[in-house]
Length: 67
Image (cartoon, rainbow, N blue to C red):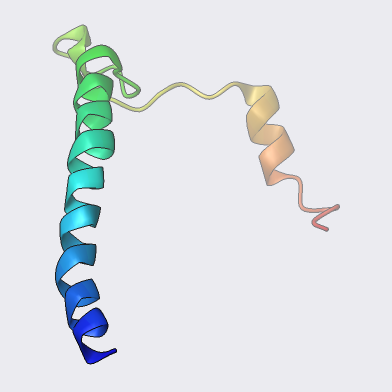
């Protein structure tokens, strides 16, 4: 039983590293290449903030029905 616990402490981090390297890292690199949610690639702009419609602003600031 002690050998199994020692083996799991060694093997589990290695398996998790392999899964991370295969699944998460390539997905993140592809997302960085093809997506630009802040629209930073537009060039020189004064601000990176996205404009908000007045209808969205009025809905979010209405505190009469919170729950």
